[in-house]
Length: 518
Image (cartoon, rainbow, N blue to C red; front, side):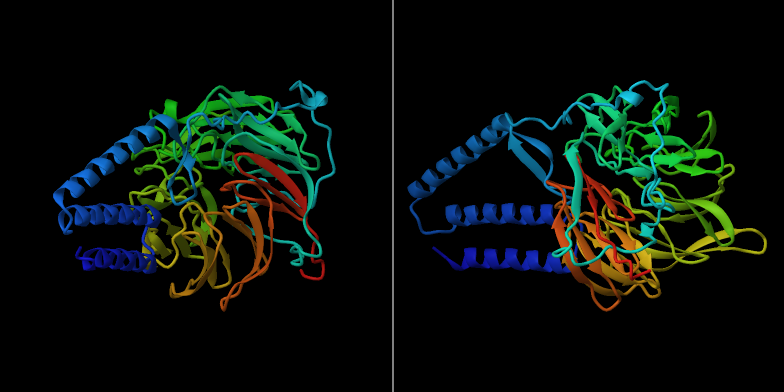
């Protein structure tokens, strides 16, 4: 039987899998599945060609195996379908064909009577302290101020204020006062919905008759709206940019960004959160290596400028001061650029190749350093941005390694360290040398916010955890199950209100605050 052959094959496959795990390569899960399939094929070859069985027995096995594989193929093809992915690893989720499709039906939106008509304004409601008006908070850093929540959730558990079904999509919330605005897909309609923060009542919901579909990522809008000076700006997954009146949801203007600029959509859809800078709203382009950044007049929607020579990424524009000048930072498909907000002119450009999706926001470390990171094996880098006396800009990498590889998770900085999910595992990297200090705690491809030394982690599983961080080690203090199902959406923490959603449900919780801490 030559048993040493299958034993050697199994040992080789196991050793290869262990080595690949230690190297933390991209697309690990699909590669492990491929190793398993190749191993099964080689074991079949051993059994057929290298054992001492009679050929009649071998041929019988060939016929049985071939029949099984053919039946399995046609059975899978006829009885199942792919419905999104199991998680951020990209492994397809296979379901029975007769299983109900997630069309975002949820339950019908019952708009409050006083705002069913756009001409009737929403009554003013007392605001909570501060706002969360855009993606990742007031300054798009994911770092919040104010008293952090208490960590003893066993004795003081989060209190559910309301919970209800919601349409499809990976959009998060923007919150202004009592208005919590998100985007969702309900059947063939892409909606921008304003909920009342205290009770979850829908106040208004303008609709575009469009549906973005993608087999692995799922259907529906991806981008988080932006609330600015009484208006809501939202980018749909197919490239429709709407400007609405915050009080009523009345449409002020709308642009089909991709269509009018002759750009094709990205594979996983438009996901940029509109950036308001001066009197402009800035969004990203499409798949072509041109017009990677576009600006419109915020008041009228009139085109202001279109710039760039790279394809867009899944990141959002970020306004920051770098080397003494205010500029728009943008991570593109193959580069990182700094733009003059007035006319979009490229001030500097750093080539950053990688054919896979980039979705992690850049971090401004100090006056002239910018930290960038991406998943799929690309890694992270520290850029030094300088301007000479003659006015020439330069961007060079101080270091570049693979110690932090977020896929579509954003990072936060505290002091000289950056924290984030490295292929689903929490990690800490020293910003000075790029060394990884630690990596532990598996939360999947979730999202994070930072309050003082506490990370609030929205895990991919739907759990929410509080983790105390330091350069030495992390310490999970509390954890509870906030949502059912896969969760990629960013959470919102507004003082003691935690607002979370995924593509199935939305919930608002009240957390007890630790008022003894700043």
